[in-house]
Amino acid sequence: MDYSQFKILEFRRKFFKLFGAEISIFDPNSNQLVGYIKMKAWRLNADIGVFTNKSMQQTIVNIGGRQLISFKPSYNILDAATNQPISTLRFRRLRTAFVRGYVDILDNQGNPYGYARETSSVLAIARRWLEVLPFGDYIALIFMFVPQTFDIMYAPNGAEPKLAGRIMHRKNPLIVKMSLNTTEAQVAIDPRINIGLCTVLSIRDANKNT
Image 1 (spheres, rainbow, N blue to C red):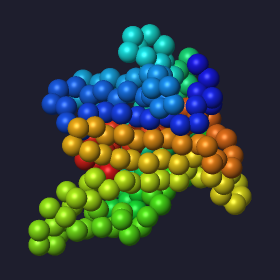
Image 2: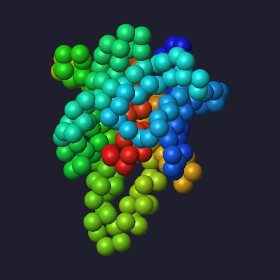
Image 3: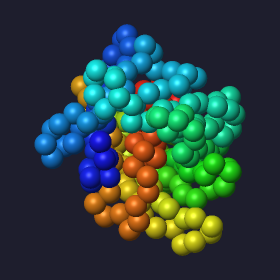
Image 4: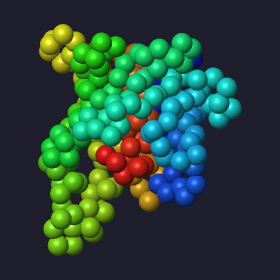
């Protein structure tokens, strides 16, 4: 399936699931299931397969975790047929903790050619630090349901960054949705990179590890 045809993809998972873990990827325009991820538990220390449907017979992309116990945990996005790296996602843990979410997108030589960055530094800081205040746990609970957004930027060789997509993360007490939108993209990148990025962000959020 050519995933570049979908300008919007929606990653959906249940807000609370005691055993196992499932993410369904939909084309929201037709409500057609176009991808599926299932794990026995929310773990990123094992390879993750992103499949075309619930039969799990055909793989879109594989994701392999590496350097997870690090200030910059990294995840390889791997070609489903050859298992060769397409790109690497490197999370800036310190930057994410103190400022806002930030992920480097690296080529196979480890050179950054893009990034995903949380758009609102004010909301990002509020999410992470309000819980230290009196009644902070209750305030943090409210902010949990405020949409979180990321811009995916393409910037090879120090060029001026160009928009390659946007992510909106929304929650309610029943379901969590992460929308990948490329309708306003200024440049196209391999859709498997965007799918891998949303997959890792979804699982890290489920692990309360963002």
